[in-house]
Length: 490
Image (cartoon, rainbow, N blue to C red; front, side, top):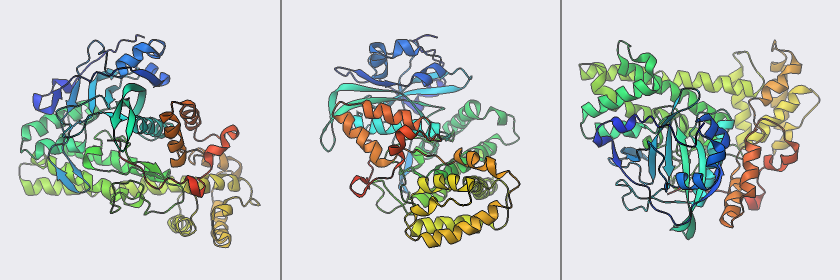
């Protein structure tokens, strides 16, 4: 392995309209906060060489590795339902693409590395807080087994950025299967540039979905693949209580990864109407709205692809609608199966949906903690005399009535009861990046103390283990610790 990046850049070979060539901003005193050593090794890089001054220079954009072709990608997007024809990477620079040790192509992107032609009125920089938040949450999502972009490094720049106050500047190095979004297609479709839409679709097929290259209608197959990825991704969010916070089309990955951790959050007390994002005033992207928003975003992708789907527009629209119509069934199948697993049900029976929905309704009514409720059920499943879960409910009697139904349903399972708790613990995390813990890490980092950041990453790397020495990280916030709003990282 080498500290040098073995770049094999494909996006930079597309026509000039797809991106702008840029140079990262000069910063005065880059200092490495954190290198993700395991991810570096996965990318066939040398962690020992990068975990120090050389890494600080590379991951702040001060030293471009051989073969890097820094570009800012062009894209558009619907933001809270309103179409913006030009967005693009306003504070992110794609250095290039690597092939990892599994043979997978991965983007290496600097986020917060200065102005680009797409910055509009922004400074192109990132403050330390959003960099730490994205590092923590993206790595937590990876440990939870949810498709996501990854964090390779975080660097202090030595300068300050102006937000609500003067804040330390920082750069996050993000790794993704690609940074192509629904909004990338919208950028060209809105301009009537069908050749560019076709070139982009061909690139996505070659890069992400090569198995459909010879399909009878490969563009329709592409839409179906993206619909499938999103129908599988969103249930995984819901099953751990994750709220993206800003599900715009420019934040919807064609590769089916969770991308752009701005005002994201994990729920404490369960309620489908939960919103944390300070910019989501109308609750468009509330927890329970995420499936329908994903489908809405996919419909915008379908609109872009219509000219490629069939010679006649009516036929193309009908074909697209048929594919979009498969989303709900795929989503529901994945979500329902995930919820059954969380309850220790590994077969399917007709009464399961009502049993599950009744629990969720109780949790919403009685302010039960989402993560702790499902984790407590793992213990209760092991012993019919245990009743630890009822402590999560304001009305324990209402929960116990439901629990009697649950235990009767468990008795119908063919799996041996002794194996059930371990299977449940494997899908019900004990640890999530709770908002108050993330905020505490950010507050400490702003004072120059990154020990809490390191400790939280250690805990979240093993979310399904009990880790009794870190039990406090599983606890919900006290009243004075609650973080009710999260903020975009711009």
